[in-house]
Length: 455
Length: 90
Image (spheres, rainbow over the protein chains, first blue to last red):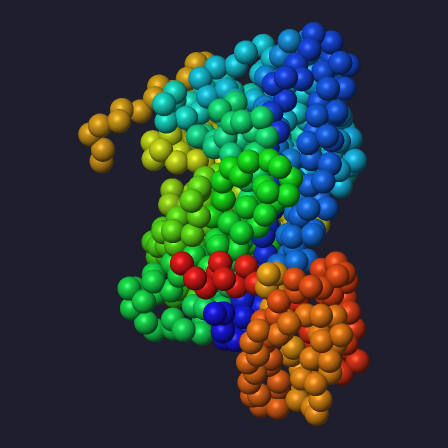
């Protein structure tokens, strides 16, 4: 029988430590919506999404009320749009029509983001992939809720440097096209390596072609809970106790996600896919991954020891989470977005955290350079260089890495940019002034790495 | 059986348990277990109840209990029991 201390502990996590289920994301295959006419494709896309996900928001809210745990976001991810639109889209503007259709469907459903305006070009781009990529700036400017992602490499295929070069330009152009809103288009655009097919988190969510027709994926959260436990029970203890505590806490957090996922799957009549075991921070005070790193013993994130602390945290979250759920997938680990984590913002402002240190941290955590604002004057080649570095880390280490960087039009180092809501606000960070232009100008791809002789 | 956990939290006062139980009895909700602690003048109570014979919706129960709590200066929450069972049991 449940006892009072367990009940009070759970409710303290929810009410005081920001425990929530970050997202229920319904993955929907749009492969059967492809048509030779753009209009017909758009009509089929709208009809299928609004049919399958019509009860998504209500179901998420019902579950949240009944179990007393907030289900913050309800979202949809779709088959990469470059595939769906490949037989009808002959110019970038055709793809923008698909983006507008997705935005309309998202508004009709009442969801805050729809992901999958994507192209998977790990080895090369089809004409449709390239058209979609070239349409991203206009699509991001013309829509509010559509998220875009481009996968430019993988451990098996290497890195498509032509796509990396193009993405540098596209990120710049997207920033320019949405400059009146702090270049927010770039906050909804992520460039990945080894992108998972079942990620429920935005902006990188898409419904991969390996997936079933529709599936429910759930992303849990809870950095505030881990932080609270460490603050109250782990000051000065050894690593064994520290790791054990994080692991147990991750287990509890993930169990809530598993419960919500199973309920949502049952009520919506859509199979359960995976739980993404991520510690995803929000700009709310106390809901910060940076605060956990400080609690482990760093003065500020970015101090020597940060990579080790993050590696430890990430690994324990996975170990606890895997035990709590039968199916784990997505990104699973700790997220280190700058603008969405008040502790990270403070560390940047204190001069403790640089892009170079963040890059090192991405070697051991679940995503990459995330929500980083840089000066608007940063060149496309430099952005491509940053993307290539992250993709290389992912490719060689057989992990997902990503870059969501915002070259904020008209801003310089020391300025700040406000995105609002979950996207938070970000200090504009310094970027190396040395050029990589000649490397980025080279054509072709970086070969896949050797899978033996690991050093 | 529909197991629901009701928690009552607030400043200790006379009649909290009585009023809550009266309401539950009226709604045909059976109390399976009650535990409570009072620390520093703060009252924490947890009830495990069976709402199988409760006729209205879960949202209605939540709203009515919350209103009852407000009337006594307490916070009353009700949640389906699975969240606690899942979180604290392997």
